Length: 267
Image (cartoon, rainbow, N blue to C red; front, side, top):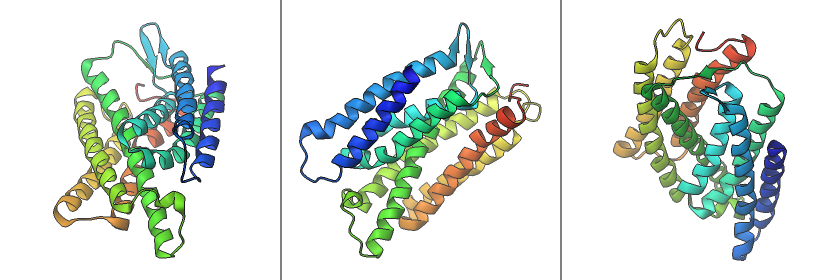
């Protein structure tokens, strides 16, 4: 029941947001209504996750549970870290992602990956990974928004919805969130190295290599921004490349292991 309500509420919030964003003169009620509806979706989303993730003394961290958890973190972090106008645009992409994650959770069966007696290092690795992925996912969505808005401006096609936030403001937001995300990714990699018992036996070689490559891409981009003033489409391409590597590192590896091979990292 909570899954269905969450999907309906996300869908309603998306429709209301899409319609209300077309108007420049809006009341506070019309601005807040999509957030209120989405807040109901988030509550039901979390209830659904509670039913799937937790059993007494163990947690099931299979791919679809983590995708659903990641999507709700993206929704919450968008509210926490982005300004209102940028937030509204990002919600048009984020709510469908949340709906898709819940549909996958409801209809596709993955191999359970049970964690019990999780060590502090293991907890640090999992939490920092999820937080990093959520923030860097928002960075990827901002990068796509920058690319679309830049293309519209170059073609002299005025789209009011995309011109609500100046490109310079979007780029500043992108790099602020990216810095936090890379710091969390660094913590994830360090704790992961200490947490892993056998890199090869646990099928984590590809995940580790791709995660390091992603960290390298994001770090080079941050350095280039700091020292060389990198921006625009170069920043967009590198952001998307880094995020693609990160998605392949974790969710690509988990898909192959848990869905295709019916195995898990733990065995």
